[in-house]
Amino acid sequence: MAQYELLLPKMGESVAEATVIKWLKQPGDRIEMDDTILEIATDKVDSEVPSPVAGKLIKQLFKEDEVAQVGAVIAIIETEGEEKNTSQEQVPVQETVTAIVENIPGTEQLLPAEQPAESSNEGSERFYSPLVKSIASQENITFTELDGISGTGAEGRLTKDDLLLYIQNKKGSGNLQKPEVTQSKPLVAPPIEASEVPSSVQTKPLASVGGGDEIIEMDRMRKLISEHMVMSKHTSPHVTSFVEADVTNMVLWRDKVKGSFEKRENEKITFTPLFIEAVTKAIKDFPMINVTVNGTQIIKKKDINIGMAAALPSGNLIVPVIRNADQYNLVGLTKSVNDLAKRARNSKLKPDETQNGTFTLTNVGSFGNVMGTPIINQPQVAILAVGAIKKKPAVLETEFGDVIAIRHMMFLSLSYDHRVVDGALGGSFVRRVADYLENWDVNREI
Image (cartoon, rainbow, N blue to C red):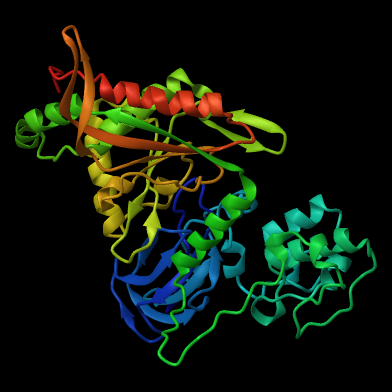
């Protein structure tokens, strides 16, 4: 009998690790070729790992909720044959884990609690995630000093928040001495006056729980969303500008073409691709809205990759990305929007399809809301919320004088990072998006 090493497959050029969510096969189970052995997840996308061989599962090398690197052996399968230790073609482990984790706050807390010292740190028996090591390097903190910081993670592991709190306390207190090593207790900060501690690290009030209250533990995706939202507000000073747009021509045009379009393309045309087209045009007019920030550097993005926030049946949120959205015509945008939305609801998105967005659109109008103040999807610098389209009386200027008419009106709200986007740019951009929507050609062919 031969032993086959099942490796965690490569899931995309920017994905280096995945969390084991659920084992569908247990040791001793018979496995046919292409049987699903386990379910895995990246930051938001769930995937299945099939078996490329038939045989019997004899060992699971990762537990549920542990993180495996791309190319790591995750299971051993016993197969028919004489050769031993056969395996898949080795997939090189990418060296971009730190960059990925920085874009997914909280992911480092899902890393395995134990790793071989030679594969994690030099001169230390303790495991540190790539993000923790990166922060320590930037702050000139040695492994010896890291070893002395107590962690609140699994089995006393040091998390990103533990390290940031330690750095903040050290700077605030001026105490540069190595803290006492206590593996079983969280780090106790030196006494500091409350006024000296930023609000982000001050003690949070305890929640009151009554006898009839229900306590619900956050699922994995909600924890990541929570971390990402808090990080975004701490990173970017948010400003929101609002514009009201008369989209009557756009609404009438869609009403006119939607029936024939569905017959011809077998696709429904919603307002979302129309909004995305207007956004891509406005980004070309104002390219400094399509940037990211790296310290004191502004990185102007060449590609226009539009993320569209989508609510899932579970109540969570995911943002699939249409890459190079400016290169699609309206038919292509419609098909891409429908395809991504459908596969998002069915948890069939590929990991790369939620990565590398440069601007995000969220449709709060789908919930009946007229406007919103969305949180920026880091590391982007702006996000546009489109509200519900409502019939309202509006004043129209005609050659015969002003008249009041019933028009289709909607609000657009743009939240932007005031570090690099000022009111003139943010306000002009959202106004330009509204202009493209208002000036829609009712005779347009599609």
